[in-house]
Image (cartoon, rainbow, N blue to C red; front, side, top):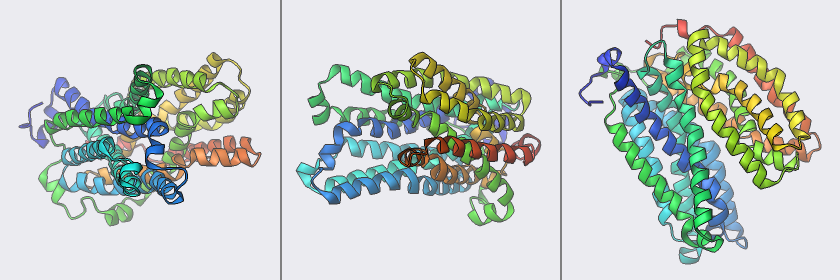
Length: 432
């Protein structure tokens, strides 16, 4: 796509140009989530190099880093990049976001270990992780907003669904890279230096995405960005409070059930169902591939039946089906049956995830759209999605594991009520 295409010509873009724009935006999303997940997958091999078990200070730094990056930095990123996108353009925000992720990954790749520089090593790792948390916190709102604005009217659900395609794809790609390295290198080599390779790959991929994003057209014009309301939290909470609370309401249930049946599910199959760890990993890999393929299907479905209808069906089905599916998984003894049950759950979740970013974008005007999407998502995601595993394990430890199923179901019921009561975002005319 040529850089000479101006914002007011967005409606005149050819299908090929729109597809290029979606690819450019989603490529960064893929890289962001690859880099974010590779940290978790490789932690087994590099944790001892930065956090010696005999040093309580570094253990506390490890805990603080995980907390800050996973919870604190996402809302901060959502606010910061939302403001940048609304005041200085979507393209600039997406370029800064992917550049920050590149810097964080490259920093981790070349970091000296604790044995070489002492406590400075975990401090620098914490700093790199904060950069990554800030970056991934800002990526959702800016990429979701851009993809929604550049997509062809009437096909926005289909095109916007590729945000979650690349999010899941990033997780799968990170897992694939680790599996390949495990086949090529010994355990000792992985612990010594092999764990650095995925971070180098992530940094290089981020530069490719940066190149693609440089050629994207901006979807807002100078007059919109210069408004005093642009990127203003005060304006967002004063004039669009109802939309903000509505998004918080359905994102809370959506994020919670998403993390329950993706990141937490592998642990649930091992700890509760008694499945072998490698078998559980294989089941979840297959499930995630299917889940990724479902996103465009349900995105296109929303173009036909409406976003509000998709959200109503998501809330209703999730509230009804969560408890029976979790109960069945608790005693499942067949990996195939476990996979089928999880796919059933994620099929329901796809009604939300395929259009999650788009439906938020359709609820806010252009001057606070990226901020509204990014901040509302980050806050609800941090509180409900990020805590899913902790809450589940807390109930299990207390001997009340089934209460967690009902908690997820209840939050999805809240999403159903919110979806039922909210105005149809496609009829608001806010997203031209």
